[in-house]
Length: 102
Image 1 (cartoon, one colour):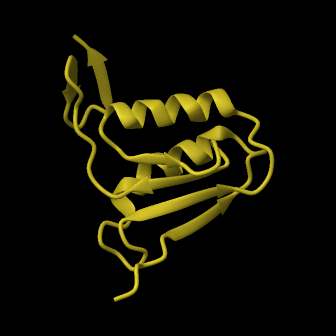
Image 2: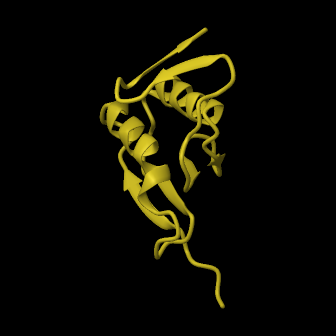
């Protein structure tokens, strides 16, 4: 059986980083076991103008246990499928959309 090709999403890096952040945060829930396998690749097709914000998002996702591979820095990312977990030393309130350190 052939290895599935990950779903690839192309996005402009010149628009607000909030689009990329939303896509990054939704990606782990989008394709677990779907046609694209267990990952989504996000490819930025031009200059990424808000690199610090995207980098901060990726680091926070990794802290929550989400696998984010940097295939070409922040220009090409692969996000693994799965559910994020609360890291040690963090209190998360279900349904509140917040997480704060203890």
